[in-house]
Length: 275
Ligand code: C2E
Ligand code: CA
Ligand code: CA
Ligand code: CA
Image (cartoon, rainbow, N blue to C red; front, side, top):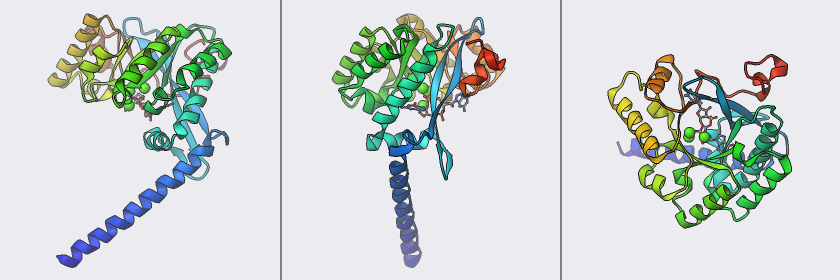
């Protein structure tokens, strides 16, 4: 048993070594990924539940590594956040998404994910202001998506930043609602304009009574606070039907459209949405 334990330990230690090395390699490659043209954005439609009309898109980042192929943002975003590479990458995302949206013929909204490191950067508000001016995007069309975990490390500073962002005319959405530590008090403390219910609650909403009750109560909360609610991760007609019955405002998910290159939605490619 003793040798077995030691073997397990050695195996674990070796694995840790690999993981640390892997992270360092990715971290290094991430610093050059934007300059090397390895990053691109895909766009996922957000629809009005009542009418089915597309009301906007969320920009989602994709990294095509020259040797590894596509690396999931769930893997590389946390590494980029730890190494501050997220500041440069996040700036690129913001510019690219706003530039793209400014070219559309319809004034649809564009949602951009922003990480904690960006929110706490002293240059962030100035950057957003500059990007809006430079791209000519109407500020009301930009929606910044933040998770509550991005705010709680320094809530006073985060609150100031969100207020300054809102004074530019854009909107703030609370992403992944329900998955954080204290969604309710954060909803009261920060000036959100929208709630995005996490996909983990939306899935099985039509088959699981507890989940249904939770989603209903979030929708009631939104109504009480005067905040529109968007349900993420909608995959089935049954889930969408539930959301329609419960008067959820907006929805996003594979059912309405997978994150795709914008050309897929554009008029000139005979896409489904005239942009
Ligand atoms: P998120 O902001 O919560 O984005 C939603 C995720 O759910 C996306 O994963 C999207 O592709 C996926 N999704 C959409 N519809 C469905 C569905 O019907 N079913 C399922 N199972 N999944 C669905 P993705 O693109 O892999 O992004 C993962 C996370 O990475 C995002 O979660 C966000 O936290 C982060 N991320 C992505 N792009 C950026 C970015 O530009 N900046 C920052 N800071 N984070 C980003
Ligand atoms: Ca998001
Ligand atoms: Ca989310
Ligand atoms: Ca998420």
